[in-house]
Image 1: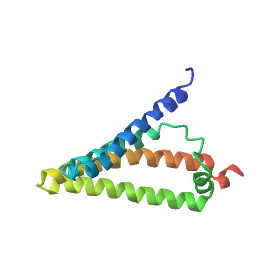
Image 2: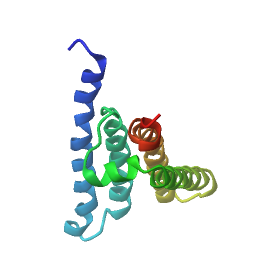
Image 3: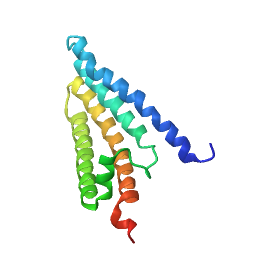
Image 4: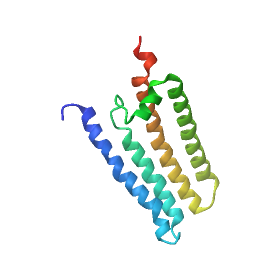
Length: 143
C-alpha cells in the first residue's frame, strides 16, 4: 500500500463489526427480559460511537449513494445538514457531560459515558461531512 489514504480506507471497514456489536446490544434486552437494558444501552452508545469514528476514515472524495450526493452537491442542503449535525453533536456532548457530573446514579453515569463516546464519534463524523461537502458542492466546482 503506497498511499496512506488506501490504508485508512481499509481500516474504515472496522466500522461494520462495531456497528454489528452495537446492534447486538440493541436487541439483546428483547431476548433477556429487559434485565440488562441499561448496560446494553450504554454498550449500544459506545459501539455505535466507535463505529461512527471508524466510518470517518473513508475517502471523503466519494459519496456513498445518490441520496447523500444530492445533499452534499446542494449548497443549502449541505449547510443545513452540517448545522443539524453540529447541533446534534453538541447536544450529545452537553447532555453526556452534564449527566456525568451532576447525577449520583451509577446507571445514568454509565449512560452519560456512552453519550460522550457517541458525541466524540460524531465530532469526527461532522469533520468528514464538512470535507465531503467541500469536495462535492456544485457551486465551488463551477469556479
